[in-house]
Length: 547
Image (cartoon, rainbow, N blue to C red; front, side, top):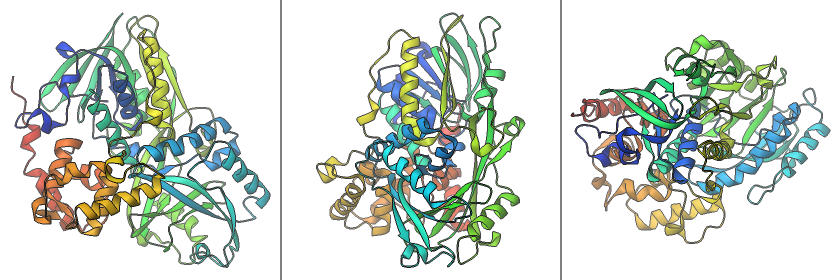
């Protein structure tokens, strides 16, 4: 939950705070208060702002600080959900894949997956039927269809044990999940929303025609009036309704229950040289992925571990445990020639999925679809987001904005399906778009021509992070020295200042693990250099605002 004051941060201009306070209505009022700055909250704020509503978003931590930066980072239909007859969810997700790929080709791109066939898991005919459905449940223009592969004669078989002689290859997509959230927040701000991180909604009182919310941030508490409230607090959505939101006439606001399922991942040094990912079937009927990650690594995940509600006290990060590490190593080692051992793990991360409780006994079988629940009688409108997955965030946000408009008596036109996220419209760099994957390569070539002084590795990283907005980071630089001191390898002061000014970065972790994954490449000493840079400037955004 979250929100910030409408007063600019002391010691910085309004532009430097990246908080568009002017979007709020007079006296702090707004049309919609969105609670939560994960992918669903940011997506809903963006969609609503684009329809002309006055929106305030409040996030208690940083954007994507929890679940939305801890996914397997896939834009996918969910092949395994077909076994649970989740055809509607799979079709909806498949329809969204290419919509998303076109909207931000710098942070999303096609990815091919290799499934080694293990006859003890599922028969080949079943896999062929599943892949046929996967290929045809939704229209494809960019992603190629599935095919069989002889692993004995393919480079995709080289990292695998010789037992695996045949397999299947199919298409899905990859996404930088944390940057996806930030891009939605940027677009929401550019369209007039006021977005506030590190601000907690400590109370929300429902009245007949509005909500009164209390927002706590570094400079104290503020009160805000909103015509409607959207509860997009993710794993905290149920707790928000039970413990923070107060009904107008004593009615219960929380009518659904969440199942909290922890998904953990391990990162090891690169296990194969090609650019395809693997999907491995496990004896427990689950699957794990092994995915090329950050050039030098392989990402392996995920687990499904059910958590009690009390594990979410505060806003702490979920953590992997030794049993999960052992499980992921064991399952990956069933396939790879070179075993994956716990001592090979160089980094881990975990997130908590807020899944709608559908009474499934197996956490892996709990639906990944979403439900939007509205409360419109006996008080101001309330919409709660239950469940969801990153691939369907745009459609979820569109449905949510439709519902909010209906509740406010003014349903406005949807607009996001054919729009770009910030940095995703490459026309000023490459001319007419062709295909998302090749468009990015054209962008990279143009950046090299316009800024030949940029080292190729730095140009590629910045192009991936910022796309067409790279010029905002580089400013008027004409040589590498113009970017200021190199705080850590490949990370200059100009980029850090941009991330503070434009992207709400307030601490080293915001940059090292969310706005980028540079922390994975740095030593502890290099990471501490970024920590020190932020520590020396903390007074710019933590000083209480002037009266």
